[in-house]
Length: 316
Ligand code: SF4
Image 1 (tube, rainbow, N blue to C red):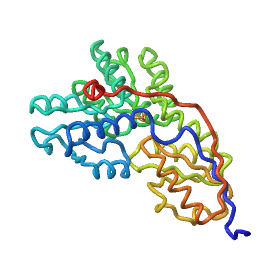
Image 2 (image 1 turned 180 degrees about the horizontal axis):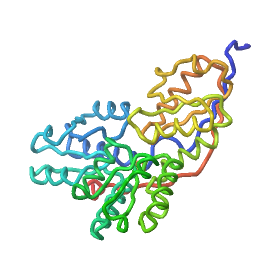
Image 3 (image 1 turned 180 degrees about the vertical axis):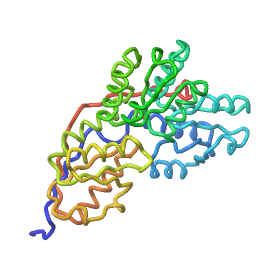
């Protein structure tokens, strides 16, 4: 039977969705629930996704903002974004048993920060003010030893006390292109500055941005499934827009305004590193109700990264 629905080709980016750090963090909460029973407290959103947080809540996880809200005698998990050193120290002081779900790639940046401080370097940290990862990384070093650089303008304006002994580090979920621009300003202004080979942007962030670049120009519009507080998801919208493709961030199918797709015949779809695949399927199913959809997966780099669980859970 002929359909009256308009045809819509869906270019589905890959890789998309969950990264190894998010997988590990969710696993840690689930295994802690199995091992210790509910409730398991989690300091901050384990990853920036409401669906994930609500699913874990339904299994018995309790999300809190600060350690003070965790009662004595119950386990607490620290989120994938990392925490300032003062947080585990406080947990130990209170005799709380804690599990650290900080992504190993964020922990790597923490260790680099410690090393720079040992060498007496002042650190210029490229990142977004207020993001939990930035707060966690600043909390690895004594106050006053790290300065936040958010833009190329900040990099042009910064006047450090000792320009000869500087280091830079970056948040893991930044725009690859913007960060390269900021680093080139820092290297021009401070030729002796030391830092990672490229930046600290993680494999998942750069692969998802590359996948969007790959398809954006072929699309009339793009949908990025993710949360507004998920840095890597917001960056994916920006990448598509810079390619000249209108893009929208949606948490779930219900957030889609069909008017966005007026006149579109090819739509790109991707998901941030904290958005589960089930939400991608939900969006595709929703679109299928309104359009005659044809799915076209576009395969990019194959990801095989898996991170080990904390030892205490591995033995479980
Ligand atoms: Fe780790 Fe990158 Fe995933 Fe963040 S986005 S949890 S840094 S792998």
